Amino acid sequence: MTASDAHRAIDAVWRIESARVIAGLARIVRDVGLAEELAQDALVAALEQWPAEGVPRNPGAWLMATGRRRAVDLIRREQNLKRKVETLGHELDPDGAAPEVDDPQEISDDLLRLVFVSCHPVLSTEARVALTLRLLGGLTTDEIARAFLAPESTIAQRIVRAKKTLAKAEVPFEVPGRDELPARLSSVLEVVYLVFNEGYSVTAGDDWLRPSLCNEALRLGRVLAGLVPEEPEVHGLVALMEIQASRSAARVGADGKPVLLLEQDRGRWDQLLIRRGLAGLARAEELGGARGPYALQAAIAACHGRAGTAEDTDWGRIGDLYRTLGEVMPSPIVELNRAVAVSMADGPAAGLELVDVLVAEPALKSYHLLPSVRGDFLVKLGRQAEARVEFERAASLTRNERERTFLLERAASCG
Image 1 (cartoon, rainbow, N blue to C red):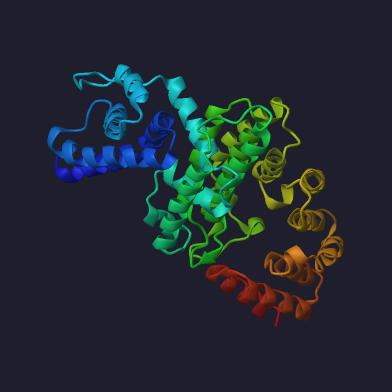
Image 2 (image 1 turned 90 degrees about the horizontal axis):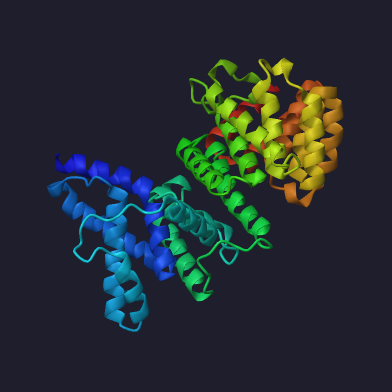
């Protein structure tokens, strides 16, 4: 094996195993920041040894054992944690022989604890996202910075501050109790969906999509569904992301321009992802989660996924689902989406009537999709001059270059 082969193997192993290693070490040292440092030490050891000695048969266990030895060394040096040394000493092979494979259930428990620590409410949303991608996604600071178009130093500081905040708050490395679980799980799901949405509809920059973020969110969601299989909203979120991701290839034309849902080539939709999403939605409903916010959004996405053509879409059901979603999760954005569904079912005048109610909504003052949607209704009603003003306003509000270009073209087409 060449050095470059070994480095590629280490990179792949790290992507897969880093979260488990950090989670396992965090259980031992009860400090996420310290656990990550120990895991990084194990990674450095791999980079030094594997090119010469070859990749071990169980690389994940090798990394974990190396990290544990670093933890033991650290604790011995500090001497004030003698009791932990004795406990750990029993877990390690005294001769440094091949480590035992970890208990899968223990790994699952550790990962779940790490998920809840990374998404703890003491952290800001931005910090939760950065820390989750770093610890659970195995992304480097540079990769996270590029994904969110932020300076690397900003992301690095955000991660450092997050770990300090967790340590200062003495956040326990544990899964929340039954009473706290729904709220804390909601925070976790919010972070995962935020990552997905940033990949699916990029906020700023030149790209329309960032598939790597969508894939990472999907991976995290699937891991979470395996860890808490009886939580319907987890299945609802995974189903929602699967069905939305199925359209990714069709959302961009050959010229790189965005393609709206109704104009997409449905032959390019990924049918495997749709089937997986529908199965996840069915699982959420079986578990009694049919009225959960993510399951409801997945049900809306499923209406699109099941329709062979745009004309076959059950817009009436989509409107009803949005109405239910608005009752469960009141939001002007939900109402805006409902207006679109109503316009498709009952005509643009009906949709415009709902949108006009939202024009004075403070939360949508700078939301570019409000004038964009209103402009679309006005075009269909033949009010071209008014539509042009709305598209120009939408273009002035978006921070995505491709979307701005698209909206200005729509404005120009209004004459």
